[in-house]
Length: 614
Image 1 (tube, rainbow, N blue to C red):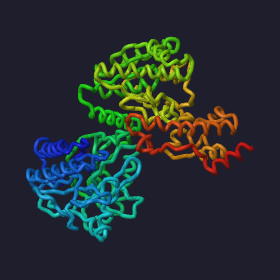
Image 2 (cartoon, rainbow, N blue to C red; image 1 turned 135 degrees about the vertical axis):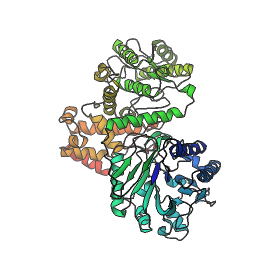
Image 3 (spheres, one colour; image 1 turned 45 degrees about the horizontal axis):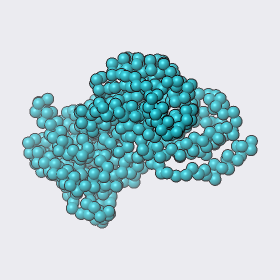
Image 4 (cartoon, helix red, strand yellow; image 1 turned 180 degrees about the horizontal axis):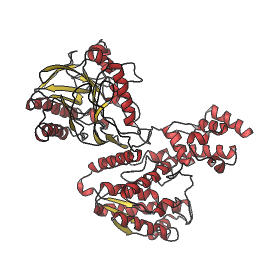
């Protein structure tokens, strides 16, 4: 049979556009691009409304609109005789949920010849059984699960988890349809795939809206192999592409839709971000597909670009102009190159903003060199007069921390003013390490409409710079790669952290990764230091800890200082602009914080006393 893997980009909150996108792909692949007839067309989870919509799901008007386009799509299958259409969407049954609102289901609909098909349990659709409620997922906030439905109706889940019996080219076939998390069942007691197999399913179909993440592809293949071993069934996996926003993050969807044999081997797999494809599934002996190992930096760059394009899609065309502060440093350089990869050169504007007596001539020269390599607009706007006027008006003395803040805010005034004049926007160039410790002025360098580097430590920024130079041709001058990081708010200033670089890790970068991505607390750092295993655990160069800390007391002081900075600067992080989600855990709705006091545990205090006694 011929299966259309409908790997498309759903536009969030635009069901009409998504309806036409689905119809266009089916029409094109059925009658224009190939003479083959489509037997089964499968599209992703929540392909009609989009997945990450915030509380738009709570709008009854929006839900009614989604259901209208659901029905239009079901009716449209009359135009495709014999084709079995499977797609994910919102459905309702008119009942009221426990929150007093219209009850909604994250569901999959199966339709053929203008009619909606019921499964063998007499359900008109299949309901997502396992609702993820971790990281940025909040399915249970909006949807009623199949498990809840079964409990309410006093039914067994086995009665509801049933295949759809469809006609494929004159023969009856039972499709076992699942929704995303229903396949990732390792830590759940309910095994949807196994129940579908027991109920007679001959082919499993998984509709997903699964964002890209580090090593996600390998994890996915492992999950499918496990499912195949347990069920002995082949599987069709269809995932979305494009970007969707959780409010704080733009998530990149990698697609990677695939067909798996019953032994878990891959028959075919689409590329990261590739469009829909029509594939034939012949027999269980169909040769397996050789999966090339992905390059981590290639995948990271693709994810960032998808997220940035997702942000740009939210803007009208006339506002798609970016004004970037170019400091001659690594962060602004990488930011500029990234924007240049998603926007034409005439829509990227670089501005150097030197301060007399503080900024070096080298900074301006490197900023201009970068702009020339990128062939973008460039200008130099000195900020001395702005700083002087503001400082005098406020009675702020040169050389103070307040004076540094005036300089930082002056830079943002220039960027905001130019963005307004040009009819564009300005981004924040801040990285994750700076953001963690609050090393930035809230109303200055932490401002902007988008922050492409906010989920990357300083070392990861250097690594990306190296990769960009490798694939795009040395756009970032080597002098920028080698310069010691500086905010240039005082003559000869240097950043007060030991960052990593492209070749080795640094303590402060790895501290942020340990705390945010792996939930390590203060006690863990003291335990590892005392055991002499901290460098190994943090994968630091040998001898770095001894170089940085002369004794246990200086180490304890630094740990407490860093946790203090982390806690005290929550108010800055909560006001950050949106960013691509790239790491295992990102600030925002992925790593949820509250404005809490810094309190060390009894265990920590005891260990600290023991260490300092020695």
